[in-house]
Image (cartoon, rainbow, N blue to C red; front, side, top):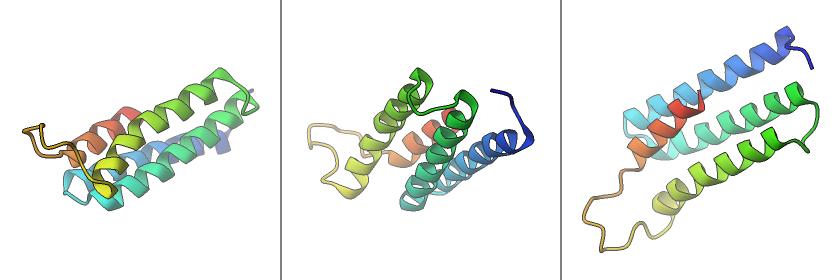
Length: 105
């Protein structure tokens, strides 16, 4: 598979959308940043599929589990009950989403 202009554009676009999710998290807009981060990861998975050729590749499997790992905690804290009361530190989902978004770049 070669890196054409369209594939390179999708990779750059997924990085830019991921940076936007990190910036939304930096200004404490966690709900917006979660959904922008979802769009960034979907773009990354799609562009990786274009690069490797099919969805049945270990790269795609790694990206899917990376998405599940990084997304499940933030959604559980934001839309669920949050963390257990035994944790003394408040839920810092904005910082977590910001770090995951910048790691996605």
